Length: 451
Image (cartoon, rainbow, N blue to C red):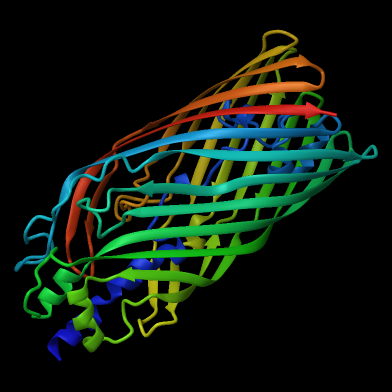
């Protein structure tokens, strides 16, 4: 059957959509969250693993627990405000190729961003004079975008939602007052959800099935997956003097083998009748499997006290996206063929400089600047995470009303350019082109209690 052969070629659409089992088609540094500390946010995370007095090192560099004062509990809450407004248009495939047909109906999707809370918690317990243990709860990866269901880019993405939550146990040992080593083991819970519209009208119109035309028989697919896996962090803290500290840490990659992902399809009745004959078992609710590796990263950090009032600090970190996201293969329990997804990520660098000013015994002011590189390029950017390299401007303040209590507030504004997209849906050959107005602000607060 001619239309059966055409459907065979075009069914890769559903397989490509099923990329939720492997991060979907999402690209962007936005998936990697640094927002684990209000104190760190206020200085653009400069000195994040070398500066004293921030319990977030329990997760990021356990060796730096040497600089925590006794037993303490710290809770941080960050609110990330991300906006993404699209302006552009799409066209169905036409007689001369992609984008030469009729315009795709629908609006610009509304603001695909959101305000997301990101909590973190840390417990530090000294064990004698030289050993330390700690417990942490953090969210190192996470992002969500959601468009209107009938927007012009619905075939490329409607909803993308990813969360990774780590529960870690840390330990460190102080060789002497100037040298410490530490490690942590964490259990990571990953959840992913993705949805797309499916243009069955174009599929069946191209197969010569009467009554179908591009855009007149839209369906929907929604896919969810989750997994638990174990990773580790190792680090060292090297104090050149009482005023100069250098931190070095490495966070492992974490490979998630998702075995129980669920794919649910909503197919118009008239299209379902044709597909049931042409390809029985395709575009039906099923389970799937995929392996997804969250990337490893390494951080080098320094902190130097210029005086009793002034401290300067800096950070450089490198994230190894490329080996983790070159290709991911999706396998289905239904008759649909497996599919290998190409992502095209590149490794990224985050660099920051910051300073603290101790205005009084109880009040400390902070500030910082950062450069945050995106792992995607114009050739691979899409609607799920319209990411772009950004610059940070951060401000913060700390208040210590008593020896046992410390409060911190941090704020960061992200400066970005307007990313563009120029996409062709490879299976239905529809096109989408335009640009985004993206923006971001982060506000965080924390309390540290010593007991």
